[in-house]
Amino acid sequence: MTLNRALATTVVAAVAAPVVLAAAAPAFAHGTPVTQAAARPSASGQENVPTYDDLKKAAAAAKKAYDDAVVAESEGRKEVEATLKALESESHPLNKAWRDAEKAAKDAADAKDAADQDVTDAKAALEAAGSEAEKAEAQKALDAAETAQAEAVEALETARGKAKSARTELDDARVAATRKYHLVKKALSEARTAKEAADKALAEARECVRDNALTSVAVGLPSKVVAGESVDFTFRVTNGGTRTLSVDPLAGAHLKDARLDEALKVEWSDGSAWHALDQAKGAEHLGRVDELKPGARSEVKMRLTVGAKAVEKGAKNAEGFALFAADAFDAYKPCVLGPMKRYDFEVLPVGSEPGDVDDAKPGKPGSGDDERPGPGETGADHGKDTSAQGGAGASAKSGADGEAGGDLAETGASSATLPLTLAGAAAVTVGAGAVFVVRRRKAAAQS
Image (cartoon, rainbow, N blue to C red; front, side, top):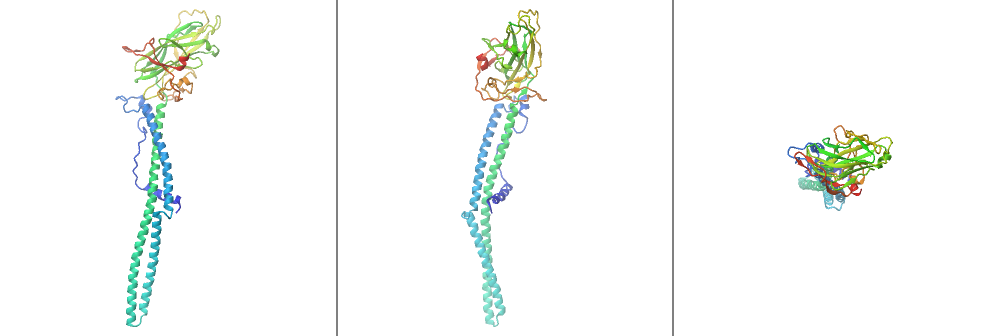
């Protein structure tokens, strides 16, 4: 019997036998999807819903269990192959015992055949006997032959029983080896299933989701700005949802004529200093509101300055636009995207006197406007400044279910943010003021 055939035969026997294997249940493989559970907190405070950190730990644990199972399967295969090969060797005790028993059974069968022949010969001699003395002697010989025949039959049965037992012990050893390997393979399969389930749950939790209740508005941004002058306004973020969020306000402004864009300067105040945004970027995070509770809002003072060279006296008006949004996260969702608002404004030539000017009106962002750089510190990776790296961002394209179509890139960059308190920014909630604690982005700190 070859090794492959022995393995195939005994695997069938092993799989057919009842097996009990303790294995961890696939983490979060069943039940309410994480994205839905996080979007609909339970009345008891979401204690039954895994946090994003829980899912990361579960995925890491499932990966380790799977990696360990892969190693165990490889070692188990080597072990079963070595065991089966050893059992095929004539020097193996079980194999040798079986072969010796088979030989003993063959010898017993030969002895039984000889005893049968002796009985046949004795019966023929009895029939041929003439005198009473000869008949008596022949009968005596027949009795002895039949006794020997009975002993030979018993010896053959005993030898065959021993040969069968020896073969059973050899086969049992093969089955035990392959059954052990089957358990290892089953553990690997279950570990793979658990890992896939944990990875899926983590991926679903990582997906960016839209929260239309997380609103951003520009208060006091005029619809007309005179070149060479500055205008101050307020960027307000309101959490109209039901969950407390950590929020990264996002803002940017540009002139539609890219050649004039370098004449535009956008700044935000942390209460003690002004920080300029990088005009080479579409929009930037201003800082971090660590905890914006449901119904609360935070405001950031901003300033927009258009250089005199942008629209000189007598030149045609230029057009510009400003973008405002809020990216957020909580313990359950690392990427929550509030809707982006676009404010269009005109830039008048130097020296213009526009008179009374209405505030710019919010509108929907244009094509390509709503590209998010990723939160300064995503909920997925606290302490990593993905936006400061300029890596792949999260496209805030909504699907039919209101969820964004992409994930925020994890760059692995170290944190380069600085805690700041916006003393000059009002964080207003019903009946009380909320403290706006932010972490300033590295790009803002260097500007």
